[in-house]
Length: 154
Length: 112
Image (spheres, rainbow over the protein chains, first blue to last red):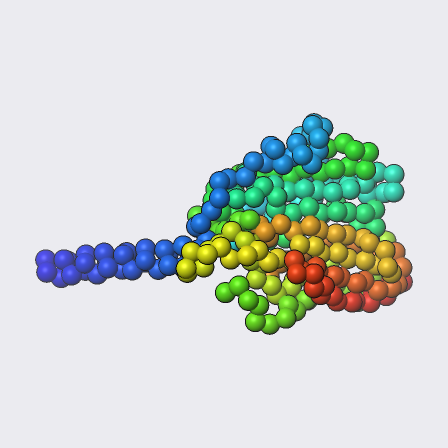
């Protein structure tokens, strides 16, 4: 009994210690602005042009344990010739303090409209990608990423 | 916390030779804190933003790929992309810091 109580107290102490540690280490990251307005940002960038679903493959983890380093990869279907190529892919996050994550700018010399990087996600949220084709057409894809420990997005 | 102790070091990995028409993947990494501008220090003061906002790759002087990075890009930013090998020559990779500093790296490739 006494042993159990001691163990329980130890567990409690450990839990409190862990919480304090988490607060101390992560507190600076948790000072966040309001979530980003992706719609407004997209309206500004694409001036009301509509994006169709498809042609973009987003490669993201369904669950990110560490929001500070979340892998992001995009791959857009395109012949990547001078006449028909992907000009850019813009990536947005709707739960970070700022909506923009990255913009990739491709040329026909790439041969393949694919790129990857690593991003910070403040919390569970949607990642939205918009591809701009050389003929001006837009394509979009979105995926939710569940974040266990939020990183300070920007 | 907000001051950089060492000068950012770029690292780029790509094959030194390729066949004409071959698709090669280029992987790059640079050491940098990528201070998002969203954090506060222990005294509650906002830590000013300082990130690398642009990555650019040219081949024989012509731009092949570029990325605009926002503060959401992780510290020690990683970037990979593809290039279709067409001819022998030299890649130049440049990273532009918010403070205007440009870091660069050059790699030659033989295409046959």
